[in-house]
Length: 186
Image (cartoon, rainbow, N blue to C red; front, side, top):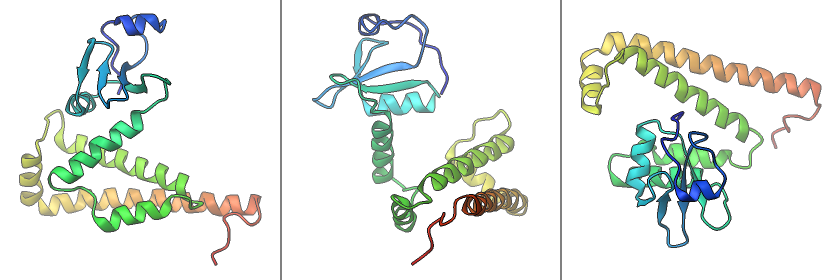
């Protein structure tokens, strides 16, 4: 998400932000409206989604407190996407993710999922080359290239398994350095 700012609005100038530095700043007001300080206009979640798709760097700040709300806005976009069409996450997967909150492996699971997604995106880039594949093109590709795709997915799954194994080994080493870590199962 690294895209330089193209201009500075009055709000950004008031905050002392120099032109061209940092991510695009969106302000969230109590009326749930989002204000783009770069364009000096109100925007919608659909506009924020387009910024994500365009790989633009931005942050969402509470207009009163300055608190960073970027994650909550991104989660709101995911929620809308999940409820608006064909969901990406199954109920079982969501339940598993919830179970990791508060668990000693919470941080490790976040890193694991992030690395896994990164590996999948890299695989997608290798398959697509410089072409941008639409969802329909991916469906056609996957259905027509079953044997070749199986080999690529096997490689991806093997990398994922290796990453998880490495995480387990690190946890085991941490247990030898810090007795009682990770905590014993009850």
